[in-house]
Length: 194
Image (cartoon, rainbow, N blue to C red; front, side, top):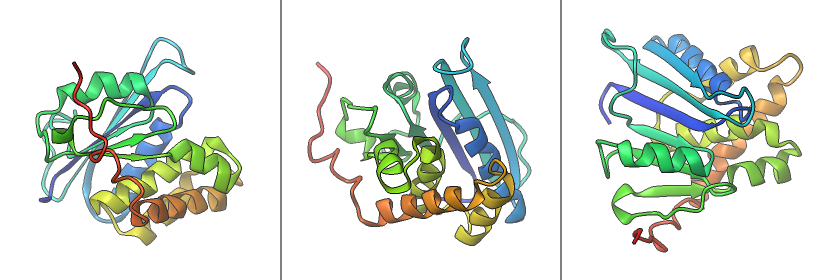
């Protein structure tokens, strides 16, 4: 995928995507990469739109905003509807959606990978709040962004006090979810909007 990675994490306020982007950026720094992290919130702190961008490169980063994502994560339907059509690298960008909240339509050329991220967080960890870390596990496994152990250390360091281990567990479950290949079903049932 080259040296430069542009990751866009999108969803609703309250899904923990800003924290996820900070942890991702921290892990990249610990992996000796150059990093820029940006974020924006919708009008409401919880429930409104939330978007965080992380650029990782071994070279100098001259512009701080994600322009051509190599990875797009959509944790709700509104973010999927908003950000998918803006992709410039159709077919090249890894698109991951949380099928708990995103139902498509999935156009074949976007190669969308759909995982029940929030549902699995609730079932396997007992807390929906760790869906953001589970999503990071899926994203890192799919895109090979950073060393897994360095990522886990950053999760433990930056997760809210007392929740490091449960967040690491969610991250590892995200890896397993990706490795099981359960996100490959969207292209088989791909739909083109009318």
